Image (cartoon, rainbow, N blue to C red; front, side, top):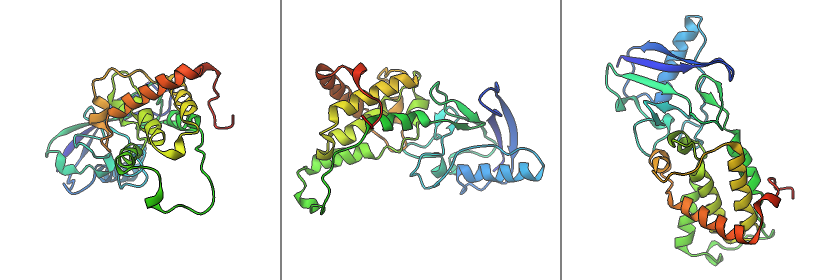
Length: 258
């Protein structure tokens, strides 16, 4: 396959950035998208040019580090798939492919296709800890939680925090991410002690980071590589409203040290 790549190049957060054009030839349809970028970078290094910076880690669809907007779609055209698991056979010989970083105020560009997603880390930190009694672990069948609830909590726990939901949303909302993290622990017995404080702190931190609000158009669910349901946003909103009746969010601490 021979392809034309339009790739976002930006040397640092202060640089204006621009799209640069690269031609790649003899790309195997069985390559992953990141392997194709590796081929291009090897060529650029051989030509004494600066390689293209992009995030990656596990390359197994687990970590979500491979955060690229491909032809306007976070993680590319294949649903329920991270960029590292997207294969070149999803494209056609002669295609022009646009490759850009996540676009969100809360995700500033570090270099080229890499963005700073530490805002997600701050939201998780604001959620604090869970209270768990130490000692010998209970047998799984003795835990006071039904299968339906356990399955729902596991569905929420699948979120890998890649930020595709933010990149897909016209408001750069992080509510699907936060909704999944809030719901995961709100559904489990271990998460009950800090349940109210957790949702208030996490939502407060999300707003302070500069993420937008949900407009219920479901782009987040459509782009999520783990297919997290927008139903968890409704769950988060319900948790937030109930907690807000009992606590003033402005008086809560953002960290787990309180």
